[in-house]
Each structure stands twice: as structure tokens, then as C-alpha cells.
Length: 304
Length: 245
Image 1: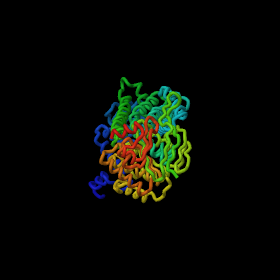
Image 2 (image 1 turned 90 degrees about the vertical axis):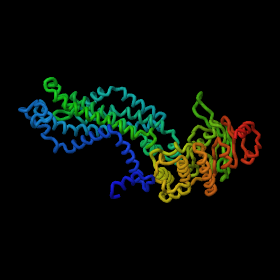
Image 3 (image 1 turned 120 degrees about the vertical axis):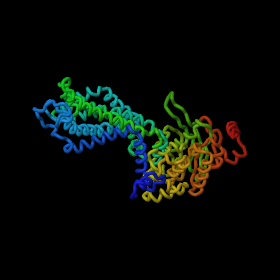
Image 4 (image 1 turned 135 degrees about the vertical axis):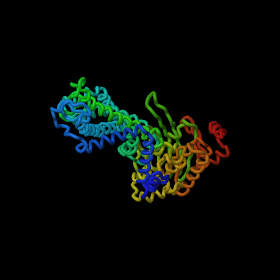
């Protein structure tokens, strides 16, 4: 396995000889399918760039994102030293965007860890167990679904105090019900299939069936849905930031930056536009990635 | 001792107005080591009997004895070590994301075997699949190969009784013959008791020594395969069924 050619042969072999090879080969096939989708690759590239930027922010940013320089306030883009201009307190917008990517990634990571996991648990248990459990869990889901998202998030943040953690909690709290619904719907189609009957006939319990047999089939469509929703989640976080209930100044959160730029939007367009473009780019990247993942992961496709 | 003894078995789905009686007072017995076929058109309740025995259909009344023990409302692991089932459609009975190895090793672990690796190789050899198939996923297998995997899974627990739910109806004719021969060989090697459901009298004639003919949830006639071949039948529906082949 020294050269790339033999590695590829090893990965595309029709007769895998070990568990690891079979798994890697399946992943490699998915990667090949994904790689063929140009738009998804663009999305992935943008997101990798985002991760790179967030990781190496201190080395990439030309200025301290919080350092104020009132002499150099509201400089237009392409000014010497201020590539994307500066804001009303003379802070470099580029540096703030670079540091803000960390906050965006933090929001994305936290919501991804909370909402889909809760949704998956609730949905698959409701779908598989059925009966009263199903009725109770699903009515609970309906209640959460009936709340307007941003308003519930507002109330939540108002009760617990403004801040990025509470904003994330509030968004997750309103984001899980659709995932629960979806996971339940998938579970209902899966639970009466022969392969679930077959494992029941081996004496497997409900917990094993849900986690080992139903989850793997729900997760792919959930991943697709989460990536497609991620744009909305970033926008919701930005919206909360814009309303002053998310990240608090001087934190360089992109939504909060737009909010600050609002006051100068007519004379100094770049202050609000640059973070807006950043939000737009990342949201678009998530949408492109989600679309590509759907092509690769959709279990109804059958090939995977 | 009989392998399977059913007395006055009723199985239904739904309650009150929606109640559908799928099986009505079915009575038959399969001797240990015997091979019994249930035939009838689709919807006649033959698969439902298998589902009632395995516990997949939970609404039933009457008496079911398996290897001399009466069955209750639930089945324990001990039961599943004695009775296993092969499903009709091999395209639906294997988990699309689990490799052959994953399917068999999970099954073996559930039944408490420790020498999993050796047993998987043995099982794959027994069903005529080499170890080259061990790490493949279902989509990399043909229908016949999938059904062999499903048979290997049902044999993993070393059961005494195998319930076969139209195990060949989803396969090509040439592959059907292979699977039927495999089932015949396995039965001879392991002294298995078969209860097989089919709408194909030729298939049943190949595998079974006794058959029961079902219509509208009722067993209308029980006869031996010799009688079936000789057309020594009493019931008009059986006559009609035999005339159609």
C-alpha cells in the first residue's frame, strides 16, 4: 500500500478481507459520489476555509478584533491597513470577521450537538415504541413546534439573560421538533421491515434495535436536513445578535456586527455589508453541502 | 414429541369493527424432523401462522406447542435459539447498512456464542458462500446470495425448527432450485424441522412430506405429498389448486 494506485485498488476491491476495509471502502464510494458534485465540493471548500480561519484566527487577523482606534474610524474598504474597512470604533472589520468565524462555528457545533440528537432520541423512541409513549412524545413535539421560533428564543434569552450560550440553547430548543418528526416518520417506515423483524427473532431488545438498526438509517437524512437547516440556524443566531439578545458587544459576532453597522448603513455601507456577506457565504456553503450530502446519503437511493 | 403442534389457532389483526380474522381455528402438527408445507393463495393466512409462532403477530388464541412446550404471549431467547425464520424477500430482510459480517456476528453475539469468527466462516461455508462474501454489503450481493446470508443468519442459533416464508418466491427460477437444494441438504445434515409457506405446489412438493391447504384463513385439507402427486384429494378447492399447476 505504498503507492496511491494500490490504495485505490484496496479501497475499491469487490472482496474486502476485513471489517475495516469494508467500512473504508463504503466511505470511499460515498466520497467518490460526493466528489462528482461540483456545487457540494464548493460548499465543502468554503466550510473547510471557515474551519481553517477559525483555527488560525490569531495568525490570520491583521489587527486585534477588539482594539479601538478612534482616529481611524469608518475607514472604507481597501484603505491602507484596513482591507475591509473599519467600523464606528475604528476596529478592523476583517479581523472581526476572522474572529467572528469562531463564534459562528461554536453556534453551529453546539446546535448540531443538541437539536438533532434530542430529535433523534424522541423521534425514534416514539416511532418504535408506539402507543402512549408515541402520543405523549409527539404532542410534546407539537407544543414546541407551535411556538414561533424567534419569539420562543427571545423569551428564553430574556428569561436566562442575553449571551451566546443562551442563544444557542434557545435555538436548539426550537430546532429539535422537526428532527423528531422526521426521525419518527423514518422509524415508522423502518420498524415493520423484515430486517427489523429478523433481528427481533434473534432476541434483540428495543434499545439495541433503535440504536443499532434504526439510527443508522435515520442519521443520513438527519445529517442532510441539519446541513440544510444550518443556514437558518446561523441566521437565527445572527438575528438574535442583531436584536441584542445573542452575543454581546464587543464580541465580534456577525449578527451583532450588522446590528452595530445599522446606524451608519446609508453613509458607510461596508460596516453592515461585510458581516452580511460572511453570513450569506457560510449559509450558502451549508446549503450546497447539504444538497450534495443528500445525493450521497439518501438511503432511499438504495445503492449505499 | 412433535416439533410444532397447533390446536384451534386463531389469529386476528385490529380490534372491534376493524378486526380481520387472518387465521381461523387452524390445527395441524409437524413431527420433529418432519417437513410440513402450508399452501394457498395470497391472503389465505399461511404467513400469519408463521408470524404467530414467532411472536410477530401478537393477537392470537388457541394452543401452540413448540417442542412440547406451550407458547405464551411473549417469546424468550431460549425460544429463538430453537425456532428461526427465513423471510420471503431477501431484498428486504437484510439491513442495508450492515455487512454480512455485521449481520452474522451480531446474531451470534445475541445468542451468546463466543467463537464468533470461526462460526461465521463455518456458516458461510455451510450455505455455499465462501469467506470472500464475508465483508460485503447487501447491495453487493445478488438475490440468491442474499437469501443464503438470510439462511446463514437463521442457522446461526443452531435451531431445531426453521420456519420458511416463501423463501424462493422472490428469486429467479434457476436460483430457486439452488436455494431449494440448499434447504434440502441442510435439513438432512442438521435434522431440522421445516414449516414452509408457499403458493407454489412444485416447491412444496420438492421440500415437504405433508401439506395443508389453506383458503380464507382456514385449513381446508391436510394431505401427504404422495397423495397430492396422485391427486387423491377430497376437497374441491385443493382439486382446483392442483389443477392450476
